[in-house]
Image (tube, rainbow, N blue to C red; front, side, top):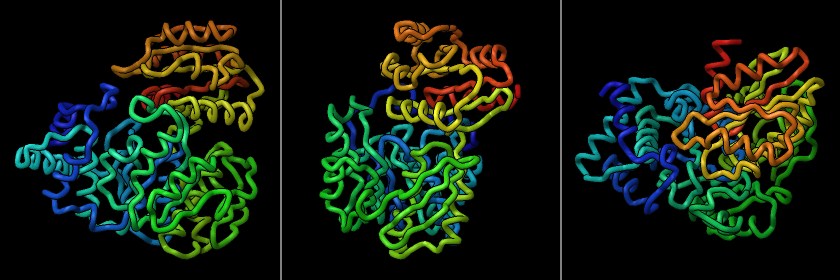
Length: 430
């Protein structure tokens, strides 16, 4: 099977990213496939991460901290921005096209053998977990795709289960309250898991503390952020873990929330080793963290920033970082596109769209992209001063840059489909 064949095989299977639907959630297909493979996910320890927002950043921080210890780390994330290979990496190097095709071919063979037809995400997850065993990683850091209990990644038996935070999202599968969502996410906690809880709302934290893990650590009690200051290129934080206070830790990511993610990640790594992390390894690990598409500056004069903000809680954080951390002196120009299923007015309100000088709406480049006209109507209803509708993302970006002066700032945000397609376009044109 070639790489192109592997992609075609995956595209022929049901894909939530395309349909926005999951029918009959179950782990049975994954369990059957993994059993036929010899349960490769049981051959290495796993740190399993769920939460509404912050999973990606926390996953990368944990990976880098483990790598600083000299471990070989397999990391599984979703979705990808530009290439599917990004989801599966060994020591932050994406899987090669050859290895990816080989692993997908193995899944295809097992589909024929077992009669189990996996979804797109299940097939990619199975390929990742098998590859990690083949390349003999020391530890896997696995990010949940959706919620937790029925997620394909939940065939893993987590040594450390991490919860970043809880907000209202994916209510078509869990809800209507945050407590319902928390219960679904708590499904990743296993009897032997050390549970690291980043959520601070007491009623929600109790859901995770009472989910049957071996131990639980709660942000605000056993660990917390003591100081969190804006620094050039990121944040300077003091972090208290159950064992140690780490001072003046530089986290090269933008936004106050990254301090919260950092202390969750550091506590998870301490829980994994059951010991403090040496200070020099903390410095080394955090210094190497890179998050494409998360407040990534893609140009200067004018400043051009891209950030994935695909739900209201993420949009609220996005606006706070843009206005508070960057505080642009010139005009503020917003380029935005969402997926169907979102409330465009709620999303724009969270983004503080009415505080931008110009809002340019586009259709996210996905079969589930919300028509630009719906976003335009919501922006005008919100009272935005100047709204320009350009359905094609690249045209929207080009217009934003054309009308921006050197002191202005352009924020491109919304669906990760917007961010994933904006990056290569900006690289070509900047």
